Image (cartoon, rainbow, N blue to C red; front, side, top):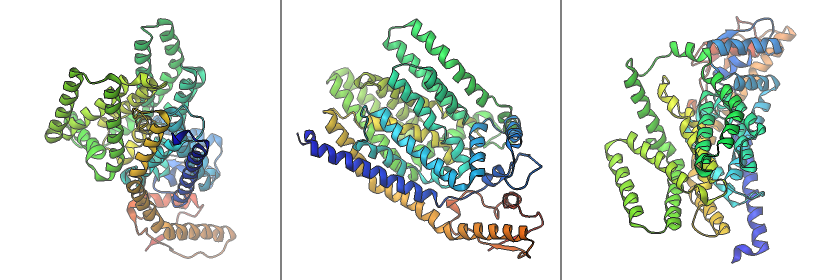
Length: 498
C-alpha cells in the first residue's frame, strides 16, 4: 500500500533521477581518461589502408574525407558511416568524441528503459541498465568500448536501432521514420545489420502469428523494410570486407575446425570468462523471473512440470558435456520464454524480436579470424532492454514489480561497481602519461611552427597499465607516423619512449 502514497512515489522518482545523474557524472569522468589509441591516430589524419595527400595534420576538406571513405569501403570495410562520423568528430576535437560517446551510452540506457516500461518518467528500473553497463566485462571495455575506433563501429549505431524500435512500439507498426533509423543503424557495422534483419524477421513472424496471417500488413512491412535491407546488404557485402578477409589469419586452415574454434572462443567469453560473470548473473536472474512468470501465468500443469524438468536436466547435462551446447540451450531457452510470454505486456513481441536480433548478430563472429572481447558489445548492449523488461515480469502488481527489479539491480550493484571501478582505476593510472605526452607533442608542434629549436628525440612516457589502452605507438612503430601527422610534425622527428 505504501507504493500508492504520493510522497513515496515522488521519492522514488527523485531517487531514480539522482542515480541517473550520478551515472552521467561517472560516464563523463571515465571518458575524460580515454585518449587516442592505435587506429584512432591514422583515421584522424586519413592515413589508414589508403592515404590522402594535399593537407597538413587534420586540415582536410570534405573531398578528401569522401575519397578516403570510398577507399575504405572498396579495400577494407563497409563500416564507413561509423568511421566517417568518428573522423569528423576527431577533426572537431577529442572532447567532442568523448561527449558524443557519453550521449550515445546515455541514450542506450534511457531507450532501454523506454522499451521495457510504459512510463514516461524515469523510474527505479533505470537502475537495471545502469547496473548492466557497470557490469560490462573488462574484456569488452578495455581497448574496446574505451577505444574510439571500435566504439564508433560497434556502439554508436545502437541508439538508432533502439530508437527505431521505440517508434515501432509507439505506433504499433513499422513506419517510414522507424525504417530510416533502422537503416542508419544497419550502416554502422555488419553485425548491426544482421541484428536489424534478425529483429525484423522475428517481428514479422510473431506479428503474423498473432494477427493470423494478415497479408496486407505483411506486404506493408516488407515494403517499408526494403530500404533497410538494402542498406544492410551494402554494409555486409562491401568489397572491402572480402579483401580484408583474404589477408586474415584464421585459427585453423580447415574451415569447419576454424568455425568450431571460434565457437569455443565465443562461449568462453560469454559464459566461462569470470570477467563476464556479473553480467551473466543478471541475465540468469532475469531468466529465473521469466520462468516464475510463466508458471504463475499458465498455472501448474503436469506437462509444464515435465518440460521444465527436462530443460533443467538438459542444461545440467550440457554443462558437464560441453560449454558450447550449454550456452546454445541457455540462450535459445531464454528466447523461447520471451516468445511464450510476449502477450504479458504491451510490447512483449517487440522485446522478443529484439532478443532475436541480438542473437542474430553473433553467428558472423564464427567466420572471423578471431573473436575480440569488444566484438560482443553489440550483443551486450542489445540485451539491456531485454533484461530490463524481464526483471519487471515478477508476478505481482506493477509498482511492486518495478521495485523488485530495482532491488535486484541494487543487489548486484556492489559487484558491478567493483568491476567498473577496476576499469576506472586502470585508465586513471595512465592519465599522467597520456596527459604529459599530449602536452609535450602539442608544445613541440607550436615550437616547430614558430621556428624554435625542438628537443631531439622527443621524450615520451609509456603507459604503466597497458591493458587499459589499445595498441600504443611504442608497441607498433607504424603508429608513430600517424602521431607525427596528427601533430603536424616533420617525418624526421624521433620519439624516445621511457
